[in-house]
Image (cartoon, rainbow, N blue to C red):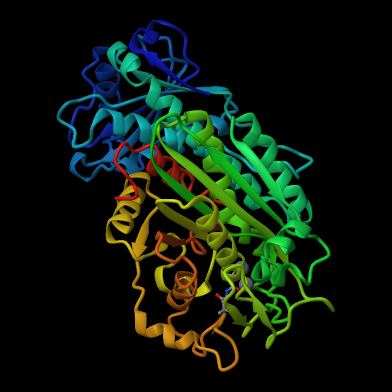
Length: 495
Ligand code: BES
Ligand code: ZN
Ligand code: ZN
């Protein structure tokens, strides 16, 4: 859907051309584009201020039927995120007019604070992601997404950035896939079906797939994971995805929490907290969609294993009770203090299994793990916990680049005290309400042995109640671009 076009396109007909305009800097050296910006700035109502918009119809000199000028504000304040949002606004303007091809002019001046590759990628991302709609369940599909997004650059840039654009497209496609899965209603993504949806697309992307069923999980000793699914009539699955590249320097493991509906179990959640709990598989969705993108991008130098536990957390006569003691895959016994702290149970069995089976050099898990993390960091920032400083830094840095913001929180050893049980090796919840995101992460840390590990709590940013510049309401696909970007970097992730 994303295409790079060179500037001679100005001689060809264009449905709608979008041009970013800076308040205090001329961003285009290409004379036709520069002349258009001069024309726009002659109007009193348009100066290039942030979020200003001006549309000219059939301007002289070029063959564009419409040109929309979008204000970027001051050059020194411009970031890649400003460009993502601007590209998102251009898509919305074009769709409102029911058009099918949007051409976006990418700034090119050497005087700008950002590199051209970064500007191109950001605009491609904002446009691609803003063009996604979740309307599968609507009978009357009012809005139609654009059919094509053209990015206008110089002929040299067109040649140079072809690979970058393809990679960006794969990561964005993965993000939209994760969004669809997270927004999908829970009656349509019960564990067996969700596992199958992942498997079909992963195989198509050249990823090896293994699915373990309830009987196999039982034989392997996944006691903590099975305790969570015990209350549901929909049996669990563990999906394992493997990407192998020729010569490899490191093996990276990914784990994603896949609770297709979290009712809380016997500790049933109250109304108000239940409605959006279809999103509790957003970690699984992000990990699976990133793997599918990775299968297409084929980054060299590392093997990547993803393990995705998928369960439904329901109350019933067969459900696990508070007070029950269960035996985890590693052999440690866990007293269930609260059946709503289920994510950590499915994660620890899966992480321990992946570590035993694959001996990864580093493991990263993504999970909508705690409401406490949302209290701490709000709805747009994820929490990162790691025993490894370099790995945590790399995740935070990558999240800055993709604007999937992550903030590191501590793993204080002495807080482990809070997870002590009188009767079992440990308890799945602490006795206090305070520091819930930390105690959840500390619980996980008890099962990773000596493996280099980072945990990303995405409970806040995985789901949006309201639409924003390039994301509709519902699943956000948070983490997919971050993982793709991390896994395609040339430097080692495992130090
Ligand atoms: N899935 C929830 C966490 C969550 C909350 C995700 C809000 C997204 C938005 C998790 O399984 C849960 O219920 N956690 C409990 C833990 C508590 C029982 C220790 C929580 O956060 O309240
Ligand atoms: Zn829960
Ligand atoms: Zn949950």
